[in-house]
Length: 203
DNA sequence: AGCCAGGCTACCG
DNA sequence: CGGTAGCATGGC
Image (tube, rainbow, N blue to C red; front, side, top):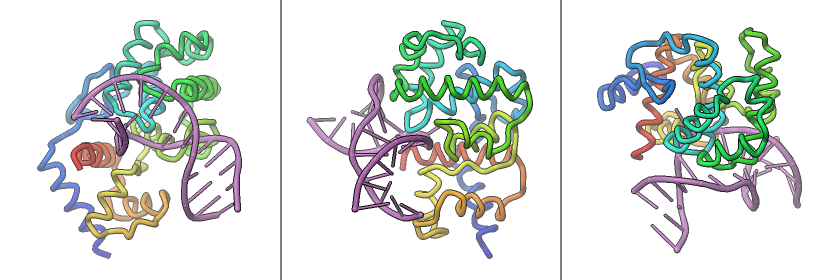
């Protein structure tokens, strides 16, 4: 199909318009053209926490929550799991849905510790309460450099606008389009998804 | 002053 | 099964 060409062309045009994005931001800093993050376990866990907090929420609000968590030294699986619930909720309040997200973070922390530094697979992530497909794929791509494409509402909107889908395709079908249409490269998936979000913010 | 944000779960028919 | 209410704060 010409989906292949279309997606490559789409990527290039987005990159030309918006430039490198340098995701995933760690400690509020972006790192253009450097895909060596996360560089340690602490950064990896921070990315996972951010992926959960940003569910249906703006990154700006997530940053406020992450800053509070940092101040309380809670960006650490063991400490987060042991943290008092009200303390955790008060930190993440700016990111919205704080009751649900506090539970999600606790459940994820427990899961993360059980990994003992092993890389999880998608199915395992999906079995954790509060981790759906987009969050699982964000974690795999941005925290573990697994080449899985992250599909969000903007992705669907963009592909409809470009005439590449009709709109009723589900998450996995859309992900399959990218898998078949692009080089299997985590850096490419990283930038592409980030660019789609950047596009989505003003569309 | 609504409406929407880098979704997910639970529940409904 | 597919569809959707509920979750919550902050910015425009």
